[in-house]
Amino acid sequence: MNTITEKKTFALNEDSLPSYDSVLLRLLEVFQDDQVDVDEVIDLVSRDPGLVFEILKKINSSYYSLTEKIADIFEAVMHLGIYEVYSITNTLLARKAFATLGASNELNIRWFWRHSVSSAVIAEYICGGDMCMKPSAYSAALLHDAGLPVLISSVPGKARLRVQSRFESEVLRIEEESQLYGASHDEVGAQLLTHWGFPSTIIEAIRCHHSSLAGQHPLDLIRLHATVRVANCMAHYLYKPELGFDFV
Image (cartoon, rainbow, N blue to C red; front, side, top):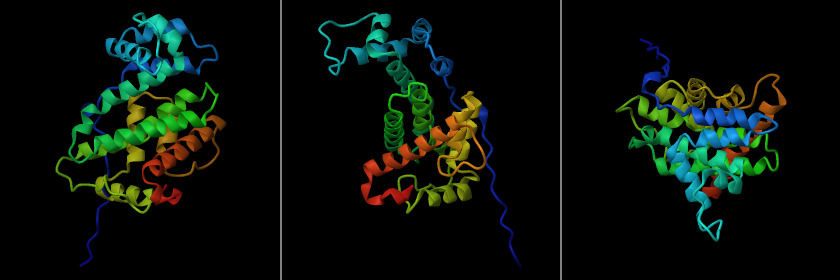
């Protein structure tokens, strides 16, 4: 007798998801403007004591070697620059959002976070002086694997996915995720960012960061998609050069 294997499906449980602070989403909107409103940036970051602490810690670090300590958030933003403030905000809020999901023993959160931040920094570098694209590229690269901890934490007791293993290619990883969970992390990541209210270009760049864009798309999405794919590949290669670029 033939056995028909039912295809698994993955349903995103929005009630169990971490929230993503509206401060970042508003900052992302502000950074899309040709003329960034510095006063609004300062007003937004001032609403979060944790964010203010991170910004002041950064500006007073040995990296900047200031002769006098800065305690005023306005002065700190002026010294750092508004894009650096955005990067700090994005990284802090992402870390907060994944703190709970990353507690699963099945995910090496240190590896996950190192790869995510490395991808974001590389994407930022690829953008060069394009200040309009940098915020979106940093966000998309930082969050491109956001679906991975969601997948792993969604089914307690599920047979462990070899997230710490190194497959011959990312294609094999996607296939195993789809078989085990009913969806792959790129698909779930896109669902998650849709739930959080991110712009459609970032959502689509994450949805397709392991595949090509099908059909015709605006130039800004094509550029963002390419940037995230290259950044992801280089971040993997950075820590495992023996894999070669064919891995991704």
